[in-house]
Amino acid sequence: METVGFIGLGNMGGPVAGHIQRAGFPMVVFDLRAEATRPFEERGARAADSVGDLARRSDVIVTALPMPRDVEQVAAEIAAAIRPAAIYIDISTGPPSLIRKLAPLFVQKGAHVLDAPVASGQPGAARGIHEVMAGGERAIFERARPVLEAFGDQVIYAGPLGSGCVCKLVHQMINSTISQAIAEGLTLGVKAGVDVKTLWECVRRGMVGRMHVLHAQVPQHVFRNDFSTDTFPLKLLRKDVGLATALARETSVPLPLASIAEQHLVAALNRGWGELAAYTVAFRLQEEAAQVELRAAGIDPQKAGKYISTHPDE
Image 1 (cartoon, helix red, strand yellow):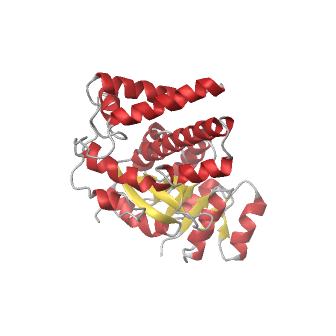
Image 2: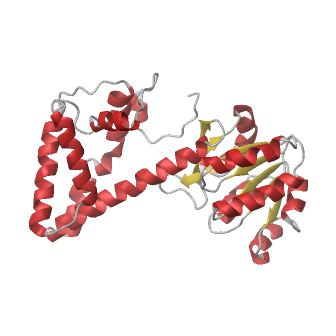
């Protein structure tokens, strides 16, 4: 079993490292705070004197650090001491350009690099259990998979180096936008006179609480370039959102995100798309603006609508 070196035993890294250790991997640990390494030493891990000392003793090296500048500094120290054929994995969140910039430092030493940022695991998962989005050479990912699966309930191969970082940034951007939309909706409903608990029940029992419906609609409509529908067309959604923004004006509630969404719906209607699928036709406008097409083959919408552990070959 390969020895895992872990650097950064803070709020995120500490629990992750704990899962790796409980999985039975021999471990070397390093943190600027001696008290952070002590519990791992008590369970049999060795504490390194420095980043370089850890790199010299490890087959797989994992960093969980707060900021990109920390990753850049520590990765340079790792690269200076890393053994040939060893793997460096950064599970922090950073720009894809950084890990790609760092990669040559490792390649010239005969070592390998993966970016594997993490997001929250499935509901109810233990602390430190995460979705893992990994980028890098496929063969290196497969070699590192046992370490990643020690703390990942969703371990996904994202593609070439930097792809994991891209997936994580998109994940966070979408989460933030959804949170803003919910905040706008709840404040509108409460100011319009509805009890917040009742309002939330009405919201969560619809699309918000059944996001698997949207997860299925995107592959069904967008990936296949088929935006037809026999249920809920865009013209009705535009009417509904227009009524909501009108209510917001009556009650003096700012709806920045909803206002933008309404204008996209108007633009789609002006293109003659009123009879197309309500919740996915707006993707066509975004595709045009971004000059990219979201097409994919071989995806089962029924499976896409489920929250499942994903192996890319399944």
